[in-house]
Length: 308
Image (tube, rainbow, N blue to C red):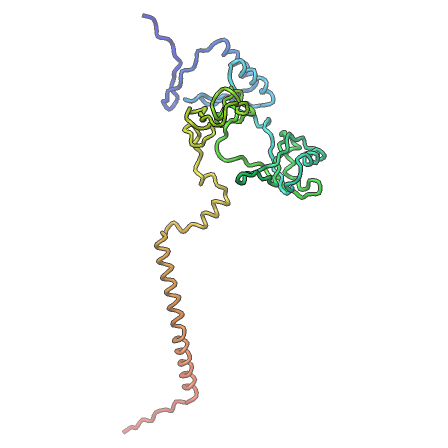
């Protein structure tokens, strides 16, 4: 009877069964040696596939790309040093041309990638807003843009760009939690789910949509899709100022609304009663004053007693 194949399934300290890892090959040994040479750190072993943490991104970026290519893997994450700095400039009129802002930033020594004026939709019209989005490469100079107070002869205020709330969806593959800038997955149409970019779609708009994730009759960006990640409750996503305002506007948790209304009625009745008693109390005070004055004006005569 042939012997059963060896397996490397083990259990961790808590008794949880660990997954079956593939057999070690010469290719895996080469990858292991390369990762040891460039300073990879392996976390504590667990039931989940452990991530690879890098000590020095500048040294390991090239080696990591080679490992991903040899292992036929796709990396969707983007290193922080490669991410762009996004800033929003306030205080510039809406009629300004982004080219003029670009020239002013160039004179100040900022190496920017793009200057875009933000817009919003108001019914069928698109309105330009007095907000300009600046994207810059992540350098020491780009971080100083948030201290900028004047641009030309205009007094401005520079703030960090706040992304739209909710999970990020890739415009290329229609999956979630990454952006198209670092996506290398084959493209899929957001409306019909086929293997082409959404911009290159040639189908008529009248044709019913097909979700690229679940296959139902809606676009892949539909928030009601069963594959769309469920975000946290709106109460958790509110700003601190919004939470404070809402909390101060709410009644006390110990009293319900009917009890508050009944207590308010009793307070109003007490105020009315006090107003009604004001006149009698004033009369009693005047009478007491008159009695006191009369007693002080007439001396009290001592009484004579007849003694037998």
